[in-house]
Image (cartoon, rainbow, N blue to C red):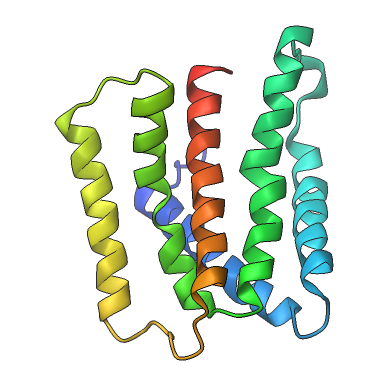
Length: 173
C-alpha cells in the first residue's frame, strides 16, 4: 500500500497549478484571442477530468439541474472569459493577486444571501488570505505598470462569481 501524499505536498502542487494558469493564459494570448483562450481552458479542463468521473454514480435530481447550470456558469464559464479578457490589459501577477479576494466574497455572499453564521474563524481565514495577497502586492513581485482599472475589475467580478459559486455548492447542492 502506498503512503498518502502529505497535505503540504498537495498544497504545493495545487499552488503550482493555480499560479501557472495565470501565466499560461497570458502566454496563450500571444497566439489566440481572449475568447479562444477561455474556450480552450474550459474544453481542456473538461477533457482532462472525464476519466475521473464515475458515470454510474452520478445521479442528479431534475430539480437540481438549474442550480448545477448556474454553478457551472459562475464557477467556470463566466470567470474563464473574464480572466482572459482582463489578461489582455493587466499582468498575470495582478490577476492572481486580485483573485485572492475570492475568500472575502465567499464570506460576504454566505453572510448576506445564504444565512451563514458569522464566526471569528471565518474572519481569521479571510484576513490571513488578504494578508498573503498584500504580501504579494508589496513584495515588488507585482507588475502594475500597464494596469487598466476597468480590466482589473473583471478579475474582481470573476472572484465574486467564484465566491458565489462556493456558497451555491455548499448550501444549495
